Length: 80
Image 1 (cartoon, rainbow, N blue to C red):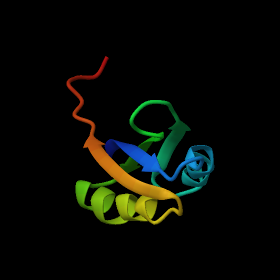
Image 2: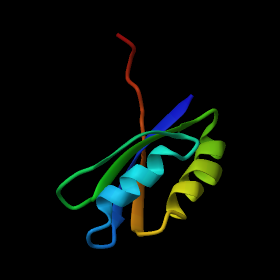
Image 3: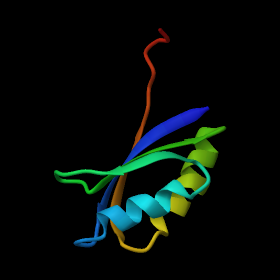
Image 4: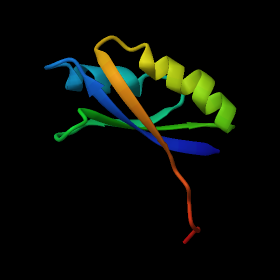
């Protein structure tokens, strides 16, 4: 499985609503609204990098209220 964190900026006052909408999307592992330069942080996953970028990222970016996203693939160094 390939995973990434998505850092998401939303329209003013929409962070909580966007985070709740993301939870229901296929490929979204978790989502939380936060403070700072980004409004929502989501963890996403798919079977391949191609599926992650084409399907999951695209699905997330279509949620109403999202203005910008930054996808950060997780590069695991090792397993405990």
